[in-house]
Amino acid sequence: MGKGTIPKDFIEQLLAQTDIVQVINQRVPLKKAGKNYVACCPFHKEKTPSFNVNPFKQFYHCFGCGASGDAIRFLQEYDGLSFTDAVEALAQQAGLTVPYRQLTPQQRQQQKKQATLYEVLAQAARFYRLQLRDHPQAEVAKAYLKHRGLTSQIAKTYYLGYAPPGWDSLRAVFHPMSQYEPLLIEAGLRVPKAEHSGSYDRFRNRIIFPIRDVRGQVVGFGGRVLADGDKPKYLNSPENPLFHKSQVLYGLYELLQRRDRYDHIIVVEGYMDVIALAQHGFGNVVATLGTAVTAAHLDQLYRHVDRLVFSFDGDAAGLQAAWKAVALLLPNLTEHQSAQFLLLPTGEDPDSLVRQQGAEALRQRIAQAPMLVEFVIQQLQAQLAVPLSEQEGRRHFLAAVTPWLKLARGWYQAALLEQAAGLLGLRPWQLARQLDIYVPLASNTPARLSSQSKAPPVLTLAHRIVRHLLYAPQWAAELFSDKDLPYLRQLEDAGGPLLAQVVEALLQGEDVEQIEAQLQAQGQQLVLQALRQLPLPESEAMRRAEFEGLLQRLLEQHALAHTQDLKTLMALKKPR
Image (cartoon, rainbow, N blue to C red; front, side):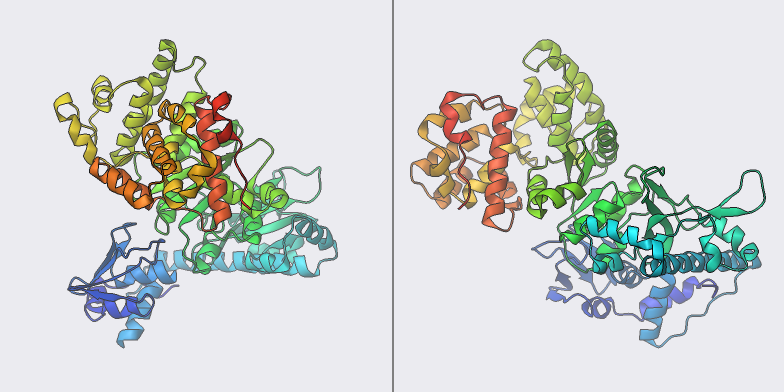
């Protein structure tokens, strides 16, 4: 801090003298592929390398998640460095000295103030941490954390602290208070008195959750009450020059420090959910800070994974938060990115779920959580007062889905159009024409309808069941019989005929290779390719649980659960 600005011509010189292949290869093993180098992307989980490094352009790009940049950008993203620190690291490696330009008096004062704010917040975090360890009244806080199943190690990882009762605890560390008071008020640690001079501590008798940016610097705090009568239950720092709720995610710093390659990140609503899930082995969890998910949040998260799981309360507020996320996702996601929505029953949250039912219960819920388009369709159907089987129901559904179709873009617009059209008894091009929207992936004239086969297929519940059967074909004989086939063909699901075909073939003793060859011969290569890309849980028990859950949901969705002839489907066998 305070060194000045870095001249642009020096940046160009530094990059010209830096070998980006060497820089990246020190952290991520690269393999030569023609003129370039490739690797599995370090910023999202994948099995097939899509991370490309061009030594001639001195540039990297991931065709999976879109991460790209020069050597400086790579150090910022991978090592979590600031721009200045990344330049310093590369300059040291190249044997160069960074020629900082002199700051203006205003710039120097701004940097000094920012550095002081960081130090004040860090000092407060250390104070709260020590109070949790040493303060006599911290026993209540320790007992609460223990009751929630949290260990001292997890408290250390997230740097949990304790704000003692009383109005002036911070005086013990910030003295004289008259000198620190303006900074403490600006940092949100003290609150000015309304009618008198002076201030008082914002956080009192609370468990403290330091909020850290991706570089690990404390930018704010959250506090959870310990006394039943105190309100509010959770209290966040107000925004300050370092802390903007729309840009910060609780737990993201800790997630990145683990260096694990997750294939998804779970987004929850509170700090306790993050910490409780981390205690149960879920290190891939972050929380928003009293605000809805923002575009800045999504941009940060999709740099690291291709799939997000949003876990919200199932009440009106949780559903509203989910719809706000949908509004950001539909127009911005690429076909390589995805999202799921897990709405928990009222009174239940991820923390209570894992404490009462265990980690496996949450994994099963996530496995069964609907994907983005499926979630939109399900929620809009749930809002209908009249069923879709009646004209009035279809009219209301069309009115409800139209704004979302017009908001969506690219692959997700085509997928939503296909699902909506199917429920309305229309072809996608007919619905697109009716709404006067242009969807490149859905042909807009009858003559060009065959071109839709080139669009990425939309995978339904039935398709996901087929994925499991192709992986574990023995389940077909365990759970189905010939008399189930007519009902499978009648399912109001685009994948119903395929499911019936696969089940019939397996019951007749055909193997998976024969079935896949038949599907390819029928022109269903894209469906097969999409099915193979669907991830499956690692253990057989988890796969079986997901399979049974999908089948149950399919039956409930199509009101077939009561059918006498489908008893065998409902009496699902548990894994041994």
